[in-house]
Length: 126
Image (cartoon, rainbow, N blue to C red; front, side, top):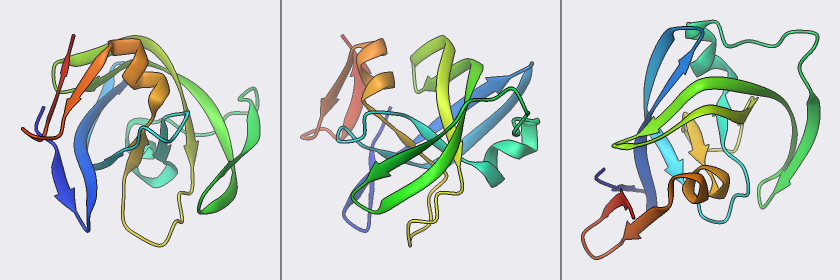
């Protein structure tokens, strides 16, 4: 998977499958400093991934502040050739002051054994 640099930050494309519906998001930040993976509520609602009363709601904190998110388990999360089945991620407003569809965090990166090659600007499995 090629890594693109936009405004000095690394971005990739990610595909989510939820209840047999698929969406590919092209503007996803690759963030080794983020413990979790999160996607924009607006972007994933297109495949029916929305809040339900039984979803776990909690607050996350980061450099940009804090927000409430809900947790969902998706059928599959894929970045290039790297994929995880039955993956738990967070969904939130993501009003961080710049446009992005989501953040790929360390939880996904370690689950797939990602190798990030900044010289070649690509990410692959081990």
